[in-house]
Image 1 (spheres, rainbow over the protein chains, first blue to last red):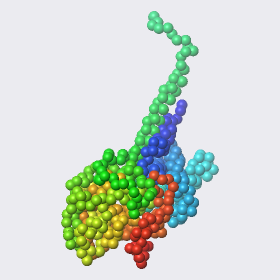
Image 2: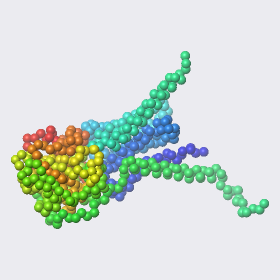
Image 3: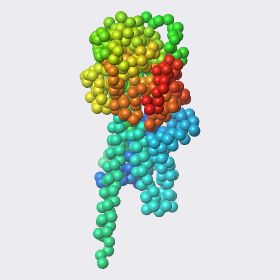
Image 4: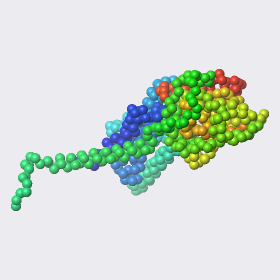
Length: 205
Length: 326
């Protein structure tokens, strides 16, 4: 008997690749508008943020709503977010800045919004590479879990990167910021309740 | 009992387990495709991926295109395409995205249109846009345009030198600045329902800047009437300044003795100034102004002081600290 939700992960992967396919399609048709580089950069970055926030929603969805299937796609969503974030950075590196390493180094040091974005990507990199079951075994579940809580830090940095980048209207990054904040609060509430019940159920003296 | 049909041989019967797996396979495929469709369309919706808007259909020509001999102020650089100039606009009165003005500006009615000239002038007046077009002959001017967001274009404008209009209205001795005001009309400009900027959009120039021969009141691009999204029917063009100085859909010019307020400096005074001269040495607080991307090109190019118009404007700022007066 196959797993009951064998269709879920392939479906999510295929769906998450649609924005990339849409970029490729419009690039081929020359339909990316007057500033295609900026467009590609912005769409890749936003897709990365959405997927990252979605991956962080999996655990609360499972705990709060009983959607246990969400846990099955958490890693996939995180890896897809990392893929889009990497493509976003590579677009900046090769297409936007033309591998002008001096300008890029100056940007990363001098421009807080680029510092924040770059740090988010740096944080996600080890998380992506330790997302395997083997890594969980090697690190031990507790330690692995603690390390992977850094995803929240990466998410916050990504939101800051987005807010500092927009010229004036921060509505869009603020919406993702509020969602991320709510998810973090839910996580803290779950953690507090677990601690309390753990204390209560400790053996009576 | 009679048999209605011949029995298949037992070897021809699909084993039940395989038969069930086939059904499961089809079911799983359908569910995966459905999931992909939901996830994919959700992401497309959130990211807002769509094709760019079309350029406007042919606008009527403002005047017979003058012979293409480059004038004293024209750049010889190749002009940006009409498609890009008319579909990549910052015009928050019609939305914050670059392609929104091209989609939304159809609600603007550029005729009938009057421009009120007030303040420190001997001959205040209200001029109809068509009277203005008859009184002055618009000139072709191919200018570079550098946006504060670090992209640039080359635009073949059609416009009236502002100095010619100023001479006609005779500023008084008290006139030191010109304040420009855009249309305020939430029905024609639905973006004004949002509080993202203070409306109406206002801008200002010092009188000597306003009288500089480069300063243009544009009425067209590519020899045609200005499309709505480019600031119809009348907009300011100051090619040595960042693009946000180029106030669109102007309804009022007021001559004053005090420095006018300008919209972007009001919105973020630490990031946008009154002068807004293009300056690669003075970065925006959040990004570099050293380079720019010319729309239609891929690699960045160096930004020039005063956007390459140094020769014609630098004397106006002699002795001024351009870092403090950004």
